[in-house]
Image (cartoon, rainbow, N blue to C red; front, side, top):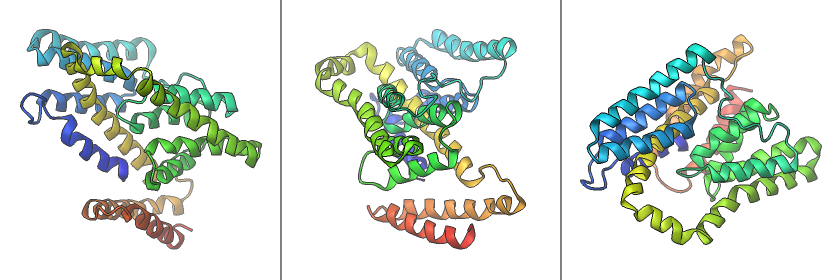
Length: 291
């Protein structure tokens, strides 16, 4: 729910033209097409870079290069499908965490922290594909629980990785679980501190550079699409999952209703305690409806 709401909140400023302060249609196109690309399993980092370049062209009224670039992305995708087949769900994976060893968890956190654009939201699919799909050592349901816990704590959402590390190390005992939680958290936050402290002056110059500023604007617009497709995928997994029986399949409807009610409450009441109250109510409702 928090992720779906974040799409709205981030879009409020990420899809505005820096010049006119109004909705920029090309940033909206970047967001929508990035979400479509995510559904097509096109690597999200390719889409982010692509729409940064695309918006750089449109901001300078280079319509023909922008149109050619936009068309070529789907021509390239079509050729890939013809010769290599439809992209695998693990196409985003680098294979850096096939097992939840401490060194693998640290590298997973380090790479994820380095590739996080727009906050922890873009880190979610990368951790998911490495731990859930490629590595197979973390069940999808547990991964969603990690995100839920990260949403209700008074900490950045990226803290969900701490619980991923804990679950990964839990197979080797409680001590290893706590070590895994600490290790992946250190890896996740290290790039943030490094970029902020060591590269602050360089980052300031890059942001103020006129040539690169439009690239970053396009990238921010594309991030909205990334977060949107993440929210939809998590919603699908949370509500539907993989029913194994008629009883589990019948629970999909009540789960969807609970989701919509909780989302409405989240929009209506913006108090900081709202997520905690929703979590408690959801836990109680789950005991009566699904246990």
